[in-house]
Image (tube, rainbow, N blue to C red; front, side):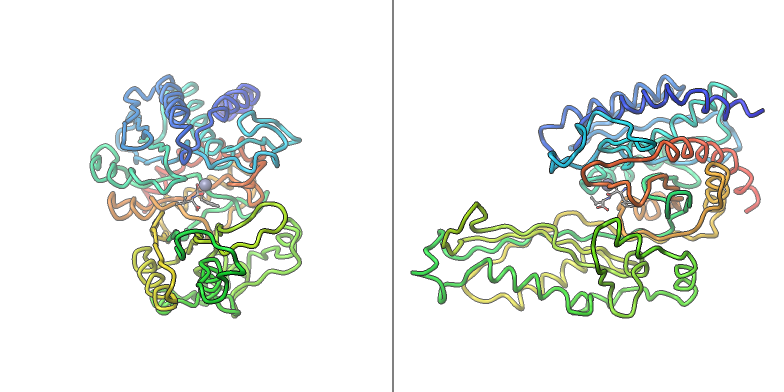
Length: 459
Ligand code: BES
Ligand code: ZN
């Protein structure tokens, strides 16, 4: 009889109540009104982790939101893992589309609905409860653990890189472990071995000094909104390719083996269309939907504003226009180089009569992990044991910029063992996660700690 698994089973109700408490903090990192709530969430986790037996649990101040570190080093000779996660969340707008208040978690069938339940509080919680159960039942963990929980992942981790540089000794480990991704499908757990990078830009166009009558001035006076539409549409061609010169130069081509492995997963394109209520998908010419999502770079307009957007019609030639554009990158593209290429492209096409200001927001490098790493193999086996079904390998279109920094600054490879679901609605209203995955995540985390020492020893 496995006492730790039995404990996780017996504690389900208690754990659900505790998770609801964690989800109640409105820790929106981008919202200045939530600064105190982000800190309070960090303090809550610090206290939880301390009570579990992580005696050196510290909330570190940064120029932004605090970073929590804690460690448990009671397994001499065993490997050390750096367990990373984030306790900040995305904004909740549009609020009226939520079925319940976003910070009051509600169970609908098997799905717990709340902001952050999948991304990433619920996944962090699964790890913490697995460790707590081990410590309570066995008095020890099978591995040494360094915990690193940040409050700024959703705004691009601006203070975490410098923190890694300054705390290399504290964060020393044999590998990093992150549960902040999604499984391939419900009932099909996966290890994610590739993440996209990100280059996020804001374009502002200024034309005349003030809004004008569109009849008296329209035509010869250059309209910033018209120009913005031209510039934005110039970024992509009809084949779904990014039309910026040099953009694909650094792109690592997909190998035949990888394409075959993607195809063998039997991705449900019809299911995706159905769940999004769209009739067509438009992958890049020559690539499947999955290949485009996981291994080809993309460009998307995230927001586009200016001029009159109120009810009815107002004839006006607006003085300004702005747009937010993101590029998701693949190895070996870098955000700085892509931003330079895009800026050159835009300036080349920019007509006279308007001024362009370009602001560079988030920048994150893409990441690709070796799938034959012993920690990855331990993760595959742990997922199978935790969820009762074999795991698959996948890549991902989302970004976790710090993964590249773990490799570059700390020399650590990362295992991405995600417990989210493709329809968890991360960053959207009614974000949710199944209890099956929250509890399965606890079991998988437990098995990962147990199996890692054997896999590392074999390597
Ligand atoms: N958990 C996500 C990354 C993710 C998204 C993994 C979807 C798997 C599926 C992470 O919290 C996230 O949203 N990252 C941001 C990074 C950005 C703000 C720098 C992203 O990808 O937009
Ligand atoms: Zn996110």
